[in-house]
Amino acid sequence: MPGNKGGLCYVLAALITPLSMAQPLAVRASHSLAIARPAEMVAVPWTRVLAALPGALPQKLVVRDGAGRSLPYQVTKPDYDARGIRAGFADLLFQYDFGAGEQAADFTVDSSAAIVAPFPSRTFARIVPERLDDFAWENDRIGHRAYGPALGAPDSGGVGKEVLVASGIDVWSKRVRYPVIDRWYANGSYHRDDGEGMDMYKTGASRGTGGTGVWDGERLHVSANFARWKIIANGPLRSIFELAYDGWDAGGVRVAETKRFTVDAGHNLDLVESTFTFDGPQELTVALGITSNSAEKGQAAGTSVHRLPRLHALAQWEVRKSNGALGTALIVPEGITGFAEDAVNQLILARVAPGRPLRYYAGAGWTGGGDFPGREAWLAYVADAAARAGAPLTLTYPAK
Image 1: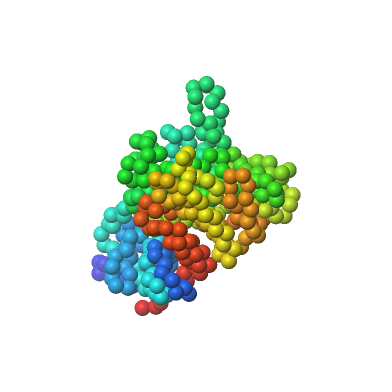
Image 2: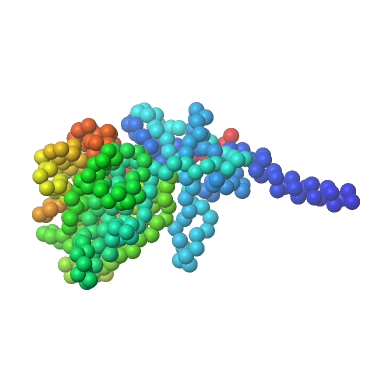
């Protein structure tokens, strides 16, 4: 049956050729800034990977930089569609440290014959039902949490349950690069520094670092605790999740909000995309806040506030008596309308339309973490982060 054998060989060759003869995908990332850009995230659409490497699998890839060094990577999936189905993959992610003056870098993406083991997680997010529905997240630089429905519920059983209605964003200061959320909650001692860092940030009913509200020109109208959560990606290089806040009365306008957080390894500021829904006015003024005094009782030793209109940013530096100093910041790349303050918050203002996301960056840096020895280092970091937000990477795919 020579004819059949020839046909079988042809079919096998057609099946094998795409993977065995496929050329690595070449990727060039470039930008226009002269500053260093450490931990810059490169996001290659998965469709690009498949076009170059048909049949590629997320667990069988090798990503190399121009020097041939293998880089950790992550493959993300798209968010659920309207039917609750996840189909295919979204992006191949990897990071690169651009040096000062280095405005382009080359990479290759190739298939691996062997399974690639998971990379160590440098970002992490989860709901914490054992602590009254906290939602906590971290990367290798800083940690945060937001307060959930169980914390806001009344103590109906009279058992002394903690009750706090607040939509501010808490800060957890880390000394270490590895994940600590699970360990700190398990130990239950995160208000004391046992060598890994601590929660020394008093949020209360303030905006914390990055909480929002509607500003009517005189006062802030804020939501209650988040009502729902959803995790979209969870490390090792990037975690993405959403927190949904049910409608509240904002001076006669019913407003609801969904925040999508993108948490990248190696960064002190997270990207937040807040989408507000409301009827009536075409736009509202939203305030993003930083609590004016986050120090625990007896720890405050001086605060400096920095309104930075040229950077579309608000920064703060708080010195503690015995726990070092903490920098916080907000950056709104697409523009702001001004600044304000109330009894407990410093505020940066922006206009929003219903259904259109407001993009901003929010986060903190602690002297105990080793990256920010003083205020000037923090302000320089904020300035560089603002510049980077306004000059994203451009990706091209040179032919081999």
